[in-house]
Picture 1 (cartoon, rainbow, N blue to C red):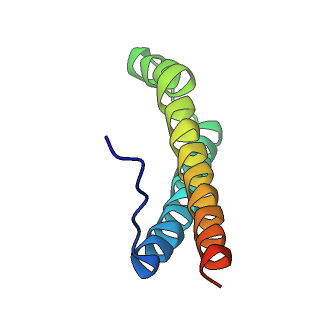
Picture 2 (picture 1 turned 180 degrees about the horizontal axis):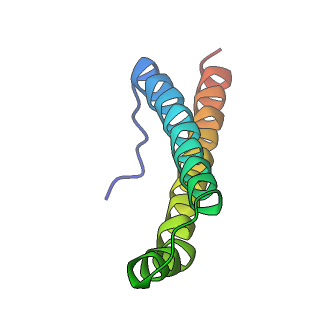
Amino acid sequence: MSDLLQMNKAQMLDLKRGFTKRADEVSALRSGLDGLLKGTVWDGRRAREFRSLWDSEFSPNLTRLETALRENGQFIGKELNNAKLAMD
C-alpha cells in the first residue's frame, strides 16, 4: 500500500457535501420514526417486537451511521483545507 495521497478536489467536495446531506437525512428519518412510534397507540406482540428492535438495533444503528457520515465529512473537509494550504 502506498503512502501517496491522491484526491480530486471537486469530487472530494461533492463527497463531503453528500455525507453531510445524507447525515441530515438519516437524522430526520430516525427522529421522524421515533416520533411516530412515541405518538401512536400500537400494542400487541408485533408492536412490542418492533419497538424492542427499534430501541436496541435500528435507532442506534441509524445514529452510528449519522455519526460516521458527519465525522468523515468533517475529515474530508479538513483534508481539502490542508491540501489547499499545501498547494498555495
